[in-house]
Image 1 (cartoon, rainbow, N blue to C red):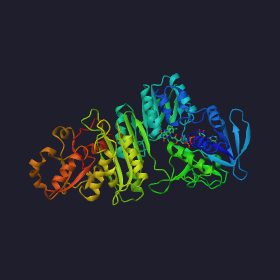
Image 2: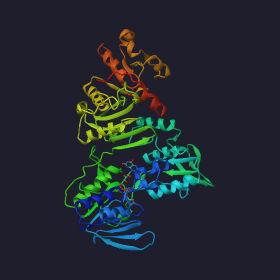
Image 3: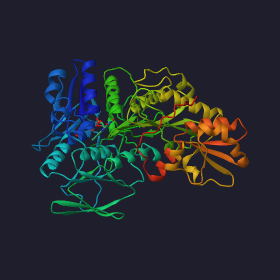
Length: 565
Ligand code: FAD
């Protein structure tokens, strides 16, 4: 049995190694257009910021390693230029010599990944504009940055590659302007959660230009100007173009293989394409979103590796399946880890789902043990069943592990009620006896049961003052630092003594605000049991002001020590 693999990185290399482990007699030939195989795409930005110091650490295996360990024949710097599915062979071209040749196969695995988009703008051909996709790209950027002692850079695109490049350029002392076409960076996050990350980038000196479209580039000697309508010309020594990626599948044009959304390859649950014996995996394929059950494209390393394994299993006679992806994702933004899984609120709304959200900012570990950090959490759930649809979790400590629990919950179809019962690891340096994930479960349970009715910070400004009163229950100093216009102020700890003051407003619905929604929930329970009609402002003043400013203040949130349950 002979398998030919196109693309020798995440999906391709995983498939190759798995086939070998399952069948030691299989013949495996792998083609790679670039000069490196099995490299760490995800680590590339950190080589610029010198976190990863040596280039050799970016390359996990060499062709010799693969040959020695797995007996796999690897042809680097060799591009597959067409696929002939009728005669079961590929045509390839050696890029250094221009020589072409053919390779036959019994099975073919396509893992060509995606390519960085270079929009067709005037001046785009400048050598000062770089994309980040592979080792060769990062080598070029590194050389250019060192030789030109880069002091100012423009990054175009606020996706995770843009954010990582911006951070790493700041870390080597460059000024950085990050330009994004949308009104927020990092599309997997809802607007307000993105604001949380934007606040951190701004604090570290990254100048964010949102809702800004690049029109053209103007090269002038040592510099290049990025021309925008909104902000005029921005001068830089280097431009990193991180404005999106597109499946790298042009090679399949005449192959007869059925294509999916965008440029993706359509596959079944065994990762088999419409042509028997041809499998496809990784960034290039169309998969099922396990939350919406709809076709989607999820371009991440975990799914690529898993799909490579599934394709290999099927080629070797094991009928394993790939059930779909949910887009679990984490990005570092300086001290912050920003993680998300499943659907965000925007997606749930667009899907027409009957959903609600829970927002909370619990501490990462017991507040009496030093250095606990707040986690900002937004959970999207099905309104009636409490089924978890998605979660976004941001914080300096423990955000990724909480998001991983939500990711597992989504896979297992768990509800908020199940979250309350999860027995998660606890000792004071690591968590609280009620872990933030349990807290999310309690809060959602309270919302579903009607023990708390919420109003979202985005609806606060449009409230009819005749019908609603905003009550701020934070401490005096917090209130004096900033509050929602017109908010009546009674600190929570004085509410039992002073709530008589509210009798004048008995006809109104009282919208209660604190920093993040916990103290206001306690006030809510007290006031509703004393005959008032109330709403709890989800996410509190922290969210309200953060969204208003387009970025959150990154000061620690005062622990208020009163749980949600
Ligand atoms: P790739 O790993 O891109 O491999 C495809 C290979 O195929 C390429 O080397 C290409 O040269 C080769 N090829 C294409 N066409 C041909 C052809 N015709 N002939 C021969 N060879 C061909 N994902 C995460 O989950 N977390 C992260 O933190 C993360 N960070 C990232 C950071 C960066 C800078 C980049 C670029 C990506 C990052 N990703 C991350 C995405 C992740 O790397 C990809 O999802 C994953 O590598 C996809 O695997 P793949 O096998 O489909 O494609």
